[in-house]
Image (cartoon, rainbow over all chains, first blue to last red; front, side, top):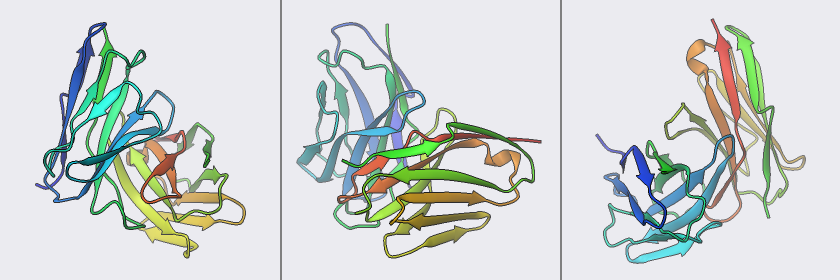
Length: 115
Length: 111
């Protein structure tokens, strides 16, 4: 089955700790995205990547880092600099990312909580 | 900067009712408007995408309209079913695929 796989589904972070959220896709999409969702709110863009070895900051990139070494993978690291990391994190992909009117495909999300 | 608002935040209707979900946006220079469905604790599923040159899109019991001049989009659900219960989010696309999301409307369809 083609799709986007996020892991783990639940993740707990201790104070001062960096944690990494995994996102893998087998849709052969060029573009990948990370969004943060807080309760009752819409999604906010953290980082996006339109091609391997390149990525751009979104609206709320502070305290986060990403890498895009492979087309299929776009891991997100939540660093200790992110003071309010508790949220639902969603990874998405689209075919090219530079073409208008593309649909986004989403993973099932990772719930990150602070211990 | 684009701002997207969805009102109401929550809606409860009896099964079989036709209903309308509202989405408003501040920047009319929009490439497209997308509607998504989100089940609790899950990711988003794309429902409909309306391009700026279109006025509406239909998929089964769903119909979405777009009025750029008034900054509004609506999602019409016909003959609602309990399985339609979910959160519905709209998102405006003003630049590439950088979507601006509304806060969503949480829909409950009661049997």
